[in-house]
Image 1 (cartoon, one colour):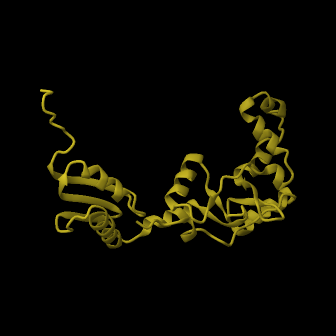
Image 2 (cartoon, helix red, strand yellow):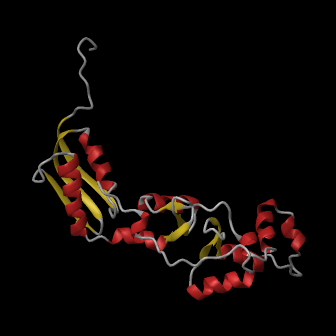
Length: 228
């Protein structure tokens, strides 16, 4: 079944930073475009790292003050890396490396999972040569869940019920409301139920699946003669 790819949702008009861009240049570039982060790119177009607002905030957070002198922070191992970044004056020193990237042919669901697991808001998109071709953000990924309910229903029937299971659509009822798919009806065997649910969940735009399926035969229990 066809899956939505990063190329379908990515932004190609990307704010790009150079490694020797100064701190204020970085701040200005992000502020002017209203973005919270940007990739740092070499002269050949390869992604070297990413600078985020959090990296910039270290500059202010670790400024020495009378009540909390800088040496207090230096004594805490969990903040040493952040303190080092607070002294950075260029994009090369500010950026996080290595950059976590995806390609244009990465499934959108995998990109979403990567952002969720890594706790990041954006992923640079690179070509086969490693050069930057775009960026995909959390906001871009959310677009996959905007598919109309009727469109999702048709895809579940076509891709899951007919193409994968070879079932008569009259036997399996598919209802979709706000992206949540409810499956009901009677399948030939019990083992087909988890498969049907998994295939439905894999369709882009499906928020959740409610399983109300029944079966005619329990093929998960084997009656082996001589073992009674």
